[in-house]
Image 1 (cartoon, rainbow over the protein chains, first blue to last red):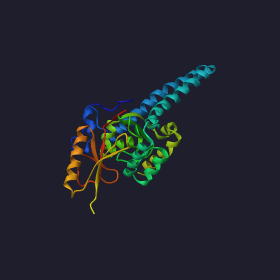
Image 2 (tube, chains in turn green, brown):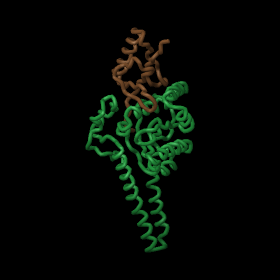
Image 3 (cartoon, rainbow over the protein chains, first blue to last red):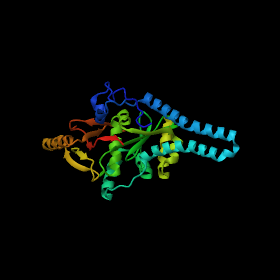
Image 4 (cartoon, each protein chain N blue to C red):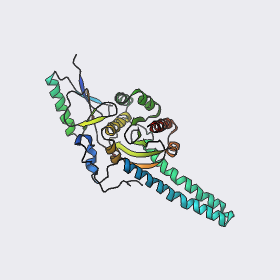
Length: 229
Length: 77
């Protein structure tokens, strides 16, 4: 499903003033600008893809067992496939915010965190200290921003989109990486989602299971904020 | 009292302060403008925050902004 965003429109919305559009979109002129409608469509495509993966295995398992009960082990293997494939997709989605080792000096990380802390409020700062993710409310939903990716919990809290997006400078501390993404997100949320590569879209509970335990409170908080509107 | 504005660049040190200025000090403003232009030439984008949850890219130094942050381009991973 990666790269499934339509490629027929231009990423730059001509109705927007240039200052409101991410400059990174100039290199992605073929990519459709992400908006609410496209996100819903993408979500339906991911759901259809999941169903297309699961139903044949479940059907085969049922047919095999009905035809020959002694084939139960094979049926169970088919059911396992039906379960594992969506989990693997969700794992790929959760990986966009998986914590990675930093090579930056402690002092650099602290300076970067100081700047990041200046950009967000107390609640977001506390949640970041606990989970490593910054919660940011947007027009498309509630975002969780990490050093190399972001999760978007849609209104209602049931669906989460996972985006792989980063600043390509290996020497930057993690706090600065998040600040880069946060500033871009705040400047042009739809453009940010257009620049990012989508890794997964699916049920929030499925993403939650694949996150590190320390990060799960962030997703719970984002889902709660998304439900509250 | 004059409010000191700052131009900072996010880099491997966490961040580096490139300039400080006040609107009442033309020399400091000019130094900041020069530093600002040099970083844009190096491929940085300049951002200012505009209230909670909002940021804006700027192409000229906003002299009245308390903080201007320089960032690198982002890309899909």
